[in-house]
Image (cartoon, rainbow, N blue to C red; front, side, top):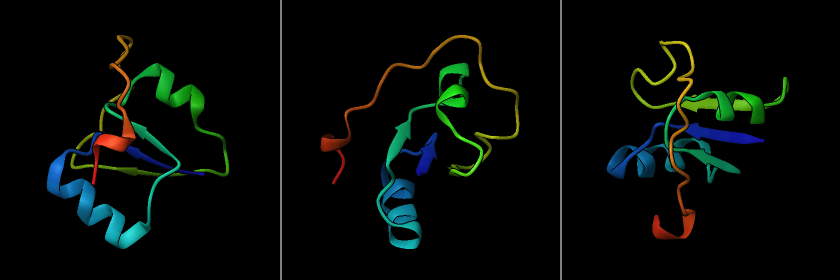
Length: 68
């Protein structure tokens, strides 16, 4: 599975051009996102989203159909 973490706007569209459409979109790097990632999944972080430990506070869900 392909996970995008922390993408917004144009960087999301750029990531799709490079990696294809993600199976999961995580608004931010939190404990819930970490639990949903299996050992053999691919995770693409936007900017510095993956440089810190996952947040203990959950980010709200994102509704993928709103993205182009």
